[in-house]
Length: 634
Image: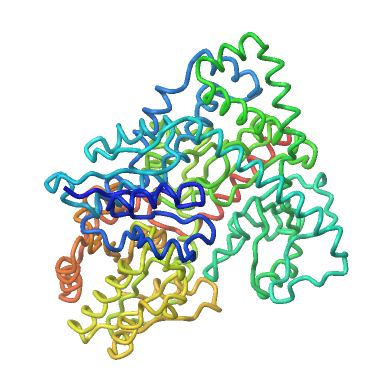
């Protein structure tokens, strides 16, 4: 019988416990490392191993990511006390379905606590594939609270993973550490401000695009683009801009707000200046305001009830209290700094729930254009929006059935970036001299420690995809294959040296690295004869314009599938689950056949885009935005 210890996060507090287990001949695997402890000689001396998804034998993707929603719901519903919920609902004034949305704040917390644990268990299940047959004993060392313990029981009861310690005190200690770190950063900032003068030279290599001395109260429309209006070097998130200078949706008439400071390129910064785009960072909620609302909530609940709830479940009460204080503090912050009628959300599913609730409470309407199709079907996703300009009626129906997605007005408009493809298609006057395939990959993280913890988007999976593309190129010399990704940084990672050399030796396959040209991926796709892609939003946009696409849903170390686990596109013939199947599908097209019937194509277009793409999605979006704004001004 073998004994294994898996450590959730190695730090200075648990390293001596780990050493004790190593003394008793346990094999120890570390999931995450805290700070620089990974470089300690002591860590290297005791021979600790790193969890790495690339080394898994068979990853069960049906347990990964978006499939944990049902377990999260069960834990949340079982945990939330109705009497406690009733006492906190009144603080969410002017919020529709306040009971349900208050519960969502707790669900958000449960999901946050369980996400890393879920990934650890997926790794254990995929790495120790014969753990039952081999009678392995697997122990888990980490900050496991009652929530995580229940999650293990519901989601991974068959693994029999034994937590070494489990206590709700981990939640309190985690919060205390966060507070101490925040105080440390505050003190450090004060010292830095005192030591360094305002004459400090800013980083000339990465100029800031954040505006100074802005009258934020003068703007009627706010836009949260999510990490700038640029999506890398691929396209600009300008779908909500009007060309009319007098429109409230003209770029310079919109206040752009970022949740944190980020770095952009010189070219991107120049774009902001040329368009006269004003950008500010959303102010942080101050500790003194949090304290003010913590005491206010406690005063409203009363001492007797507070003691009752603390005795009943001090952790749940603590979380309700913090979430309530954060909501009220955020609401006051928005009221003080902004006087908007409308908020535009750049990335629907990543917009903070608390922020969305605060805007709703202040009667400021939030509007989002759907960013991606597939997350609609992921059970763990939660988002709140007043108006959702989505892809299709199917999306509206799915949201209506969901327990965790709340939209007051769902309006199908089509996929916004399908317009780009339609515009490129208009300019195509000649056919390709050779059959051309454009292949869209996943990105590769250059950092090894980040890469090893990525379940499906890792070096091994991506190298396998490139190798299979090379095999296609060698098997079909009459075909040209263009590899196009979100970037070409992967070519600088040593791991890909072998496959890169292979690509360079085959004359009919190459990597497109033209990232100075925005929308180039759409230009390539529009002129292609076939697209092969890891599941990506551009694949759905290609379906919308009626072009051929194959989703390559195959992973070398998994007998399960990723994208089709969430939505199988009504079993239409667009997925390849192995290289052999991919090769057969390409051969079918080369022989003059089609992967889909005309009825299949139309069915997919209605599901993903509400109709065949017509190049007028932005027109519909702007029409609806103007209507919504006028309504908000009444």
